[in-house]
Every structure is written in structure tokens, then in C-alpha cells.
Image 1 (tube, rainbow, N blue to C red):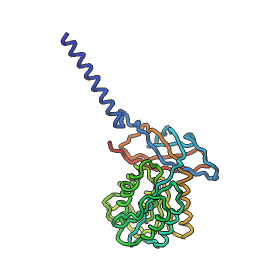
Image 2 (image 1 turned 120 degrees about the vertical axis):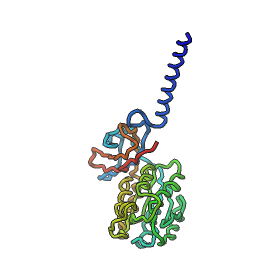
Image 3 (image 1 turned 90 degrees about the vertical axis):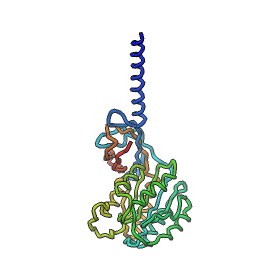
Amino acid sequence: MKRVGFLLWLIILVFFMSNTVKVSIAQSGRNSGSSTERTAQLNVIVHSKTNSQLNLNKDSLALFDAGIQQDIEYLRYDPTGARIIVLVDNSQTLRAETALVQKIAQTVLQELQQDDRAMVIGFSEQAEVFAEFTNDTKLLVSSISKFHKQGLPKLYDALVASVEDGFRKQLGSTKRAIVLISDGYDKDSKTKFEEAQAALLNENIIVYAFEAPDRTYGAIRPKGTGPKPIDAISALSESTGGLLFKIDRLDTVEANAKALVKELKENWFTLSYIPKGVNLVNTRRLLITTPDDKLEVRTKKIHPPQNF
């Protein structure tokens, strides 16, 4: 009897430990395969080539994560206000006139709606907040008079500071974008390019970049200092689902500044899905398509690897 009782107790103990392990795995977001039950959300920008009203549902798009087609849970238009950081390169060697840089920022800020909030940051060797998040257009526009040219640009540090010290204080907001005015040049940031890019991708922040002429004239960068400026600013905008504009004529930059704010208001959707058949510890490519040739769609192009 004692032996039977001991065996029964041992069976119960093994069963309990087995279920405890299963619960721990589920709570960590992992399972015995390579996929996860964690819901992922994407910002999706949708434009109609015919300027017709957008009437979309989840069947309007196809999503591929790491080459594997995923089941979309929902696709919803996002009518909420945007949170925008205007991030401006204030370094002394930026090849763009201060007046033109100010005009880009001014146009973006003046196009904001009542439920939008914006923050203005200038960076060179340090990031400097010129205006905290607010919908006070007059205050925001007046802050751009503080733009100046001095020092060298620590772009990657400024991007991470914008994510960690700026956006994370805006709780509950999912429509977030950085309007970056820069040539993509970074000098001696503590943050690596890949780390800055991953911070943006992990937080689903879109980058709209206004590109100044390359101050390095395409020179090869020393090993370990990151990509060439043109490659850096292109990758930051394109990988996050944003757009890249040239800083050239005044009428062109004004039109582009107005268009990006309109896009935030009218063309922003939220897509939800549960990644299946993917390995979260690897970098994964994303692809979103539509069978409707009258539509154009964008989302971020990369999921960075996740650490558990």
C-alpha cells in the first residue's frame, strides 16, 4: 500500500510539473514550434489611385511574414489623432538653408488637426527639445525660430531619444510618425544604426524624411560608423513604411509636407494578425500586397528579432 501511494504521489507530481512548464511557455509567448500566439499589429498606409473612397476589409490585402502568408484578424481605418515629432538636424555642415528647413517644419505644423499633437526637436551633438507635445500651433511654429547650425549630428542617438523620451510618454497613441529633416549623416553616436532602426520598427513608428544634399558627397564611411548618409536615410524611411522627399524647391517641399499630414489623417489603417510559422528570434521580412490594381499599400518592411 505504501508503494502504491508513493507511485500515485509521483504521478501527480510529474503531471503538475508538466502543466507548469506548459503554462510558463504560454505566458512567455513561445510554444514548442517556431510561431507564437502573440498578436502583432501593423500600421498600413493605403491610397486609391482613382481618389475614390477607401472601403476596405481584411480580404482586401494579403500579408506575408518571413515568406509565409498570414491570416489577417482585422483591418481598420484609424481615425485617431497623430503624434508627430519634427526632428531637425541642427548641425553646422548640413547642406540646406535654415529658411528652407524652417519652411518644411512650419508647413507640417500648420497642417495639423485639432486632435493631433506634435513635438519639435533639434539635434546636433545633443538632442534639444524646442517644443513639447502640444496642439498649440502658434507655440509649435514659433519654436522653429530656435533652429541653428552648430556642432556635428548624432542622428542615431537623437532617433532613439525621440522614441524613448518622446513617444513613450504618449500612452495609448498608435498613430506615430517622425518627420526627419536631415541628410542621414551621423557622427559618433553611441547608438548603432541597426539599434536606431530596430527601436523605430519595434514601436511601429513611421519616418517621413526630407533629405538634404549629402555633405560627404558619397564618400565611403569608415568601418563601424554605419551606412552612407543616403543609404541610412533611405533605409530609415522605407523600412518603417514612410516616404523620402528631397529638399529642393520651396513649392515642392511645401506640397510634400502637406501630403504627408493628409496621409496621416486619411490613409492610415491598423492591421492585426497572429504570426504563424515564423521564428521570432530572427529578422523577418514583411510583404503586403493587394489584388486590387487601383490600390497602393505600404507597411514596415522588417520585423526585428525579438528577445525573450
